[in-house]
Amino acid sequence: MRLRVPRLKWHMLRRRKADPGHLRANLGAALAAGAACEVDLRFSADGHAFCLHDATLDRETTGTGPADRLSRGEIERLRQRAPDGRVTGEAPLFLDEVADAVRRRGRDGAGLVQLDVKAAVDALDAARLERLRATLGDVSRRFVAGACDWRMPKRLAAAIPGLQAGFDPLDFYPRSMPQGAAAFRALGERTVATAPDASIYYLEADLVLAGLAEGVNLVEMVRRGGAEVDAWTIDADRPDLRTLLGKIVRAGATQITSNDPDILAPLLEEICACA
Image 1 (cartoon, helix red, strand yellow):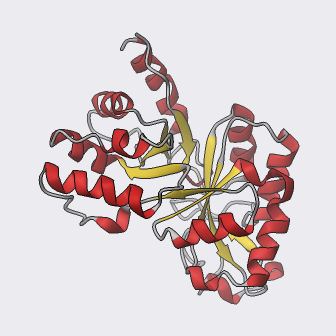
Image 2: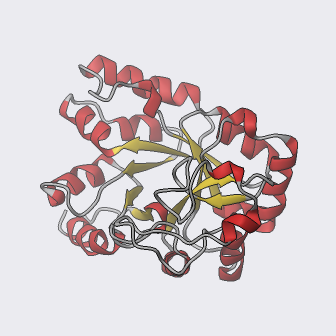
Image 3: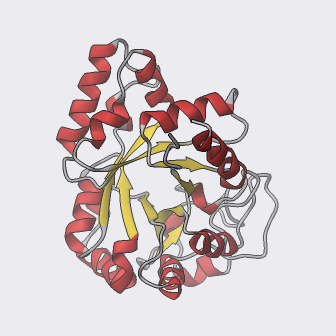
């Protein structure tokens, strides 16, 4: 029986790992392909959400220092950097540009845009929440807010009608991974109990694999309420990529995050067709 091919999510809007993050061309390509995509959000000094992973500007842009000290106008004069440090011709991408791109594709596009808000939940004051609500507007249901602190997506979803909420239990386990089947089962139960209303759970791929090795399918545990599951992050340079992807697919993941979606797409099709 052919397995369902998981949706691919373009991490930081990347098609290939060497791409700079948050490129406008890649946003358009992901939306046209019906893929899911993820953008990291920081706030400018005057409250505009823009796409940046780090708390400082140095690695990803031509700017320096904390990202939240510059106004939108100052940020728009910066240029993005590629992972190798190369300066591109593009200014940082703002959330209103992302929302407008989604709006141009129509309200019924196949892919979701994940908003990874890199701010403390207490930083989401009434003014910022209102700006986010107005920015997403009539396409808010094409977005999902994801975080390791469930209070963040829960607060955003309550303030923005239609916005979905996702949860990542990354803070619930050590980087050495849980030990033993009982610990994995307890983690799965805690994940669902913490975020029972999540529409999608983000599970580290290595966590899923470690659980399977102990006889515990965390994907299956958290999907019992009908939620989706994203397994992150699987790139083309992972050792034994085909075997790893096969295990993730058979575990039931509905989405896979990757910096190399162009490379993984045909491999996933082949794996699911041959199952």
